[in-house]
Image (tube, rainbow, N blue to C red; front, side, top):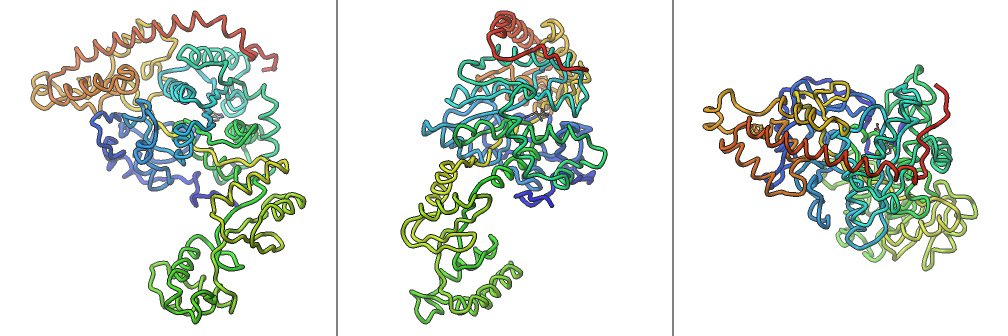
Length: 545
Ligand code: TRP
Ligand code: SF4
């Protein structure tokens, strides 16, 4: 069955309709200190329950649930470790992450790292995609290897889009990415359909995933197209491909709907490794919970061991059996294992497990572990070295022996923008979003027609202030129009909630800024048309249908 490392089933449906009614204002979700925090849209009316479905609707009713139920971590907790964070990070638009720390550290230390994201070319690129474009570009500017890919296989198989349309949209996405500042000389842009290396990796990764697992994660069933499934392994290969030349921290900036993919990719990255590294105290294996308890027993050896330099498993078992803990099942299981080990001494060690190694690779590992070691059939125990050193050694041997040595990929998640008409932003409702290709005048009009967080009358607004946290127009400022200017975003917010700003003027200002942005963006696009020809991307496939 599924080996989702975080222990929950991402395909599971949450059907508790309270999710909608007792949603907290998302400004509280990230619990941040900055008043700039915008999030307007988090609890937009009509938002769905919390499910993370890559091919479903992209709304999240309650971001807090993503932390509790899916184990996504709060971005605020790593924010302080990011050198010169992007405004989307500072303003809590990027609200969550998985394992971003290694990326932040690499950035700080000038070590290699990568950022990769993909786009399904199903329509025009819009201001929601711009968030991800900006995230890729920022990571590139921070020194990362940046990858932008067109998920054309996915669009064709999961969305049934014909190739001529895909070609056209693909071109538009790439052009906007360039116009916003992606450097194609430094980074890489590709189409899934055109990347042999990615497809080869997808094939290999597919050997590690089976149908029941994909079924459990994505709700696939007997009716699911085989090609749709192939697009999943292709995405897994996309995500791991930056590490094909060398393992490096890699961040995948996406919306939280993509989290099931990220989890599977993290899982597969570990599954194709030659060796696993764990910690142990004796010859037998322990679960994490058991290990913690045995660790306590080891630390308290003075209290029970006849010779504290050589505590015996059976002595520890006796002591642990009386130890008070809420984790009784883990305790009892640990006690049993300790009892079975009898007089074996209890001694901390790191353990290299043979996962997928060839025989030669395992032997090479055994040779590479110097100092005291104990070699078993499918694992080697080593003493006097830290787990980190052990991980490094395992990876080194693996790479030397022709393995991938992947690090688990990291991710960052941004909030979905609220639709301009309230509710969700949807590519199928033109008035709800602004396309990067919209005529600047239309962009102006859409902003002018947008729903606001304003009060019924100007008088009430002066008295109570507007509800910036509920306002799609404020969101436009925070996510896009204020750019890097925190002062400006804060000013809009403060003036709004303080009742000094009225919606008419506020929208006028936003509409003008939007018009300017679109005009400028489209000018850059026009300038870069020719640069497209220099790219190594074919925008005219001769695929059928
Ligand atoms: N599945 C993504 C989407 O729906 C597109 C995608 C394909 C992707 N490969 C990726 C995203 C790799 C991030 C990383 O838009
Ligand atoms: Fe929204 Fe501006 Fe009105 Fe405040 S003043 S509610 S930010 S439109």
